[in-house]
Image 1 (cartoon, rainbow, N blue to C red):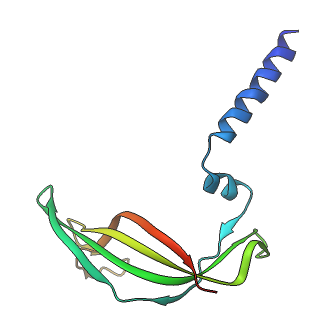
Image 2 (image 1 turned 90 degrees about the vertical axis):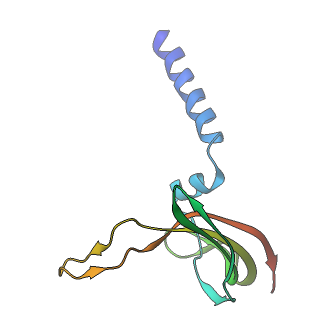
Length: 127
C-alpha cells in the first residue's frame, strides 16, 4: 500500500512540476527548437548608455526578419511554416568584460562586449 501511494504521489509531483515549466523548456526536453534562421538585420540604434557598478552599460535596439517555425530534432517543421517570416524587435543590454581575452595561441584580445540582458518587444508576421 505504501509503495502504491508513494508512486502515485511521485507521478502527481512530476506532473505538477512539468506543468509549471515554461513552454520553451518543455519544447527543449522534447527535442523541439525554434528555427534560428535570420534573413535580415535592420539598423542598430543605441538607446541609452548608463553606468552600472562603475562600468558602462549600453542598451541597443534593432529589428530582424526571421523564420517563424518550430522544428524537431530531425529538422522537420512541427509548428508554423518554413515560409513564414516575422519581424522581431530586440533590445540588448551590453556590458564590457573587465579583462582581456587570451586565445589558445596566446594572442591577447581586448575585453569583449557581452549581452547581459535581452528582450524582444513584439513579433509581426510579414508573410
